[in-house]
Amino acid sequence: MGEIPGARAELDRLGGALRAQLVELISELTPGTGLDLLFLDEPTVVDWHEPLKYRYSTDFRGARAAEVGAAEVARLGAGRLAAAGWTVSQAPEADGSGTVVTGTRDGMSIEIRVAEHVPNVLFSGRTPAMALFTPSFEWPAPVRTPENLTPGYVLCYECDGLGRCPECGGRGWLPDEAAGRVKCPECLGRRVCPICRDAGELAISQLQPFQRGYYPELGKRPE
Ligand SMILES: [Zn+2]
Ligand SMILES: [Zn+2]
Image 1 (cartoon, protein in one colour):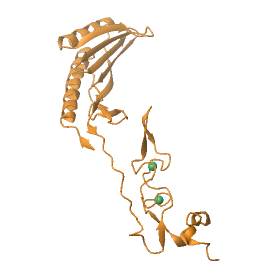
Image 2: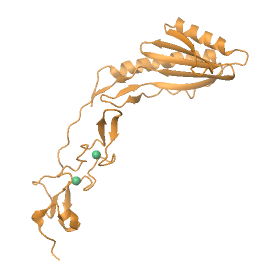
Image 3: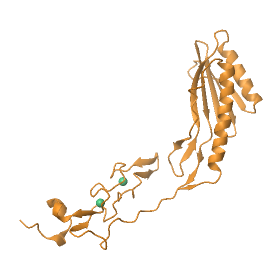
Image 4: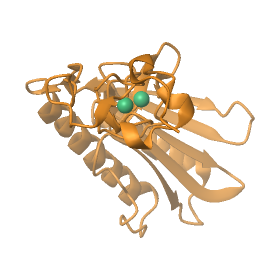
């Protein structure tokens, strides 16, 4: 896989900006909340179609001070975001349980959720999803060929010497239109040929009778 020049640095920059903005909001709207659980350390894959898309995201829960109402927290949050250059909107939750303030900037989004009947304030932040690598996959070379076969062995009938899983080529997954990737049904993600387990060859002396059937040149097993 080839790294896309500058992509990781740009995503890290956005992740850092997102974190700084969240820290500011959390400190102001839910003072005294520890930030130990604000995880924004590594981008994660959010779209498994090639090329994979990564983003930083987090959900964080704080509690507003008892004397500050939910509407006031929403107002403060919206004001703070707007002052920092975010495009801000505010709407009631679909189920009527509270208010959600949404801010967007540079493809990032932050949501602040408040409700009158609970002191919790929920913060979520997302960077845009970005490709970091260009996909590149080369079908592996077989580990065994007629030229380097061990004496007394035959090429594996399942993978023909490949050793790696002959269905997925050793990636452990197959491309899938809906999910992006699905676990390879042949190797179940183990990457190697389920018959020879990466050997590419099988010892003639240990072939099961049904396996000998794949090699008519061996003839019938001597009784
Ligand atoms: Zn095999
Ligand atoms: Zn496979």
